[in-house]
Image (cartoon, helix red, strand yellow):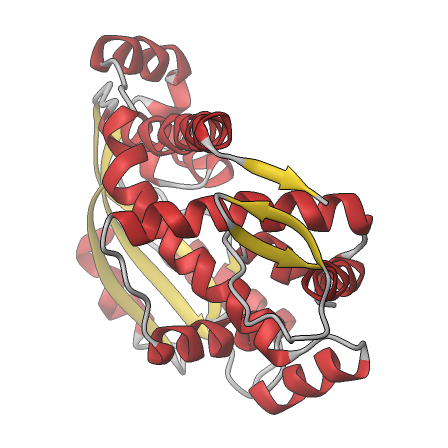
Length: 291
């Protein structure tokens, strides 16, 4: 269950080394103990595995990252760490007390977890200040990639209404049957509300303008086949049985939304690549001594 922790924690570890601990490696003069490595190994085991070598490498990288954060006057408060700990618990759907219990039952110190969280938060700020400036995206290339993704189904601009048959406390199948009756009686957006009055718990709301690229592919494909005044087949959603009615439809090869999506995807990929390069640079310049 705690494998989700691994996806959330990309940071550094900074712990106080007990007097009885043996130094295994120093990073620019800062020691990493056998106890720290053993603790990280247990945390990795809880997340799915990795072993002592991976634990030691993580701690080295994290110490370098923490030192860079300190150089940049980045300070992470205890309150921020506590909030991050709560977020981890929430994401794996347990209470903070239960998360503490799970860690302790598996031999992982709470301080170990919190030290890693502190480092992750520090490195996040370092990345925002240093790595983000290294990410360069070409608008021309994004335009070309976005245009290539457009097809006939995604080349329309719509004004839509949603007709929703609320399912709270009601059977979805019976509500779908009622929605189909509405669909058969539907004569266009102007009478959408009037027709809904013949049914219980049926709501009509304006969605306004939507480009096909803003919609799920399946819905965009269905809408592309319909004319103005058409309405989609009922779909069961979390809130009820939903149908979309077309009030206006026009051709529009708008790449704005596809381009923004590509920008986010490519930006994330470049951020990861530049982050790894920056880590390698920190290692190259560091004095790392193994004992």
